[in-house]
Length: 363
Ligand SMILES: [Zn+2]
Ligand SMILES: [Zn+2]
Image 1 (cartoon, rainbow, N blue to C red):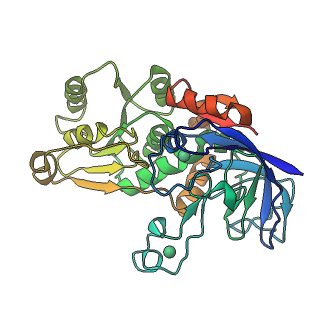
Image 2 (image 1 turned 60 degrees about the vertical axis):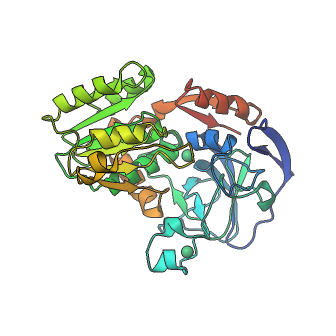
């Protein structure tokens, strides 16, 4: 038997479909028949070579949902729930965190562990079926499998996808207080999820700057109170209107999920004095930004935090909250297109051109 996979061979190169050998499952390994994987902004950036240390050729696709096709002795998910062949599950895409190094044990920041690897990003196709744009995914021993919560289905989970978890992590990282006004920069999957979670965490109001219009309409559905189309307003216009809605002070918390360096100085200018700014949209290197450290940071007494990736607890807690509030989080509506393996290149192009907010790969 052989398995087809869409392979990103090098930055800028066309996506190719390769036929790979069936993996040999080791004890503790699980083979998933892929139900759906996603194309997110990170995949677009990987295709432009904007992340260091990516071992091309890779099988992209980090957050995925699959049906257990084969298991060598794994009968519980990461939280102890029973799983068996035929069940549809998802998994935490980060693997091999060592729990033995300085970052893991002393700083207690496993997201900075040097051993950490990510499915669909930092594994080469030569390492195996370790990405979601393939007919099957090999979950190596220790990969944290999660049953999909009862109140959710595969479409919800993949509709939320990595943006769901990153958006959750960004709000978590902001330590926002109930009653805060929160501004989200960016209306992609991360920004939309962050907006929804900021509302659930008790924001008095959620504001958003983004584009295009269809995403901003979805933001309204997710509970965003006011939106500004970044392509139809100037920074001055936005600043004036946002200040007018925040007693002249600016938002208490700003979360950057735009992935555009220009958003960062704007966010620093908008956040209120003594406010907090979380940067979560620069997972890849898209360039530099300049700001005035006196007027926009020191004198403003602003706190800036970066959020690198997600930890396992973010994934578990995000899914639990999503399951509880599924009715007000129609994230499956983010999905704009479904593509086969042979169409993965077109899916990437459509995401890059903002023709779809999220594309799914259905191998
Ligand atoms: Zn470590
Ligand atoms: Zn992603």
